[in-house]
Structures are given as C-alpha cells and as structure tokens.
Length: 285
Image (cartoon, rainbow, N blue to C red):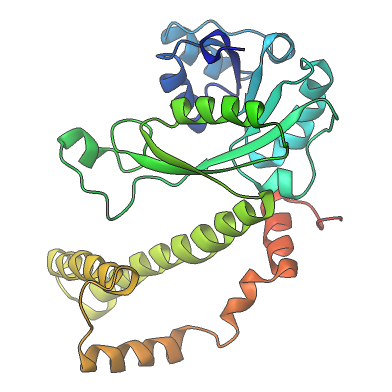
C-alpha cells in the first residue's frame, strides 16, 4: 500500500501529544481521523477545524492507530479498539511502558509499535529563531526518534517509520530497538536519571538563591553556563576538567550519589518503576 493512501487515526487527539502529532499529520498526505472523548477536547479540535469521530469508528477504518492517551489507560483503550482494527493494521503507542508490561490487548494479525521522540539534542546546531524556540521538538528543531516494533514484516516497519517520521517531524533518524531496550531508555536513562538530575539542578539553584542569598541572575548565569560546559566535557570530551574541579566532583559523588545507584538498570528495578508509573502492583511475566 502506498503511504500516501494510509488512513491514520489519532486517539486522544486533544491531549498534549495528540495535538503535537496531529499538527504534523494534518500537513501530510495521509487521511487522518481524530478521536477525543473529552467535551473540552472536542471543542478545542473543532476550533482547529478538525472533525472528531468515535474512536471505534476511527480504528475500524485505519491502517495505523496512534494511541496518544495516558499510559495508565492504554490497556483499557486498547481493549476497546484492538478487536475492531483491520487485519495487518499497526497499533502505535508513544511510550514503551504499557507494551513492556504487556498491558495492550493482543491480536495475532496486528503489528504493535512504539515510538518515542528524543527531543532536539542539547548539542544541536540551531540556526533559526524557530529552532531555538522549539525545545520539545516536532515543530522546527530536528530530532531523532527511538522506536520498536513487534513484527518481522519489513513492509509494516517501513509504514510505521513513515508515519513516525511525519508525526515527529523534522526527524533526523529513527533508531530501531527492542521494546525492552526502549523501556531502559525511557524511563531509566532519561527520566529516572537525566530528568531527575535536571530537577536536582533546579533545587540546587533555589537553595543557592533562597538559603545562601546569592542574587538570582548571578546564580542562573553561573549554573546555565556551567551546565553547558559540564555536558560538553563529560559527554563529548570537549575539554578536560581542572584538577580542582575533579576533586569537587568526587566530593559531590560521595555526598549525593548512592554507591549502588546503577541497580536502576537491573530488570527487577525496571519492572518496579514501570509498575509504579502504570499504577499497577507488579509486572507479570
């Protein structure tokens, strides 16, 4: 099937990610169907000129069904839509948690894919105001995507990649991994670790200003600039840290980081955090 003839459904089209992917899909050659349960969401979509149809009706007609709904309801939503989907259709989720936990309703004649945006890299060479303004991705700043598909059908994977590149555009590359590998990347690498460190930096900034009394502009200037240097030096090896800085870094690690922190990469810890995210008691295998 030629990709320009694809029918793509966005379920949860008025949510944060639903709106983002819909904006790009709307400009594609695909036939796009929008579904949204919330009355306020339906009104929002109507204001954008997007006709809303029932989710079951959208799933029946679509070659690719995108579930842009919260992780905690993916199981329930998939139970309603999977039974009516076309044989050979692709069910595409935006986060790996539900797929990893095997919460999605199953059918042997469907293809299950997950695709999560990497967001524009901190090292991206931005050249326009629009690219600088697009910190999340999907508007002007190029980003990469990591995806997984539970299928050996290369044609279906190609179809999935075409939709993925469109809904997250502009996309530099799509990296294909397993569902488990994607779950290790998100949440472990980027949420459990990277986003937590970002939150810690914000708390440290607040402590510097409110408790120590450093003027906020000075504290922000020092932190923002040194965050850039820290990332460039550690992740890209751009410049060596000074000997004094290395001593301070060792002190920080000894004081703040637990010795066993790498346990978050173990399977049982991954299961634990995903179960917590999905608000279920445990991951059953």
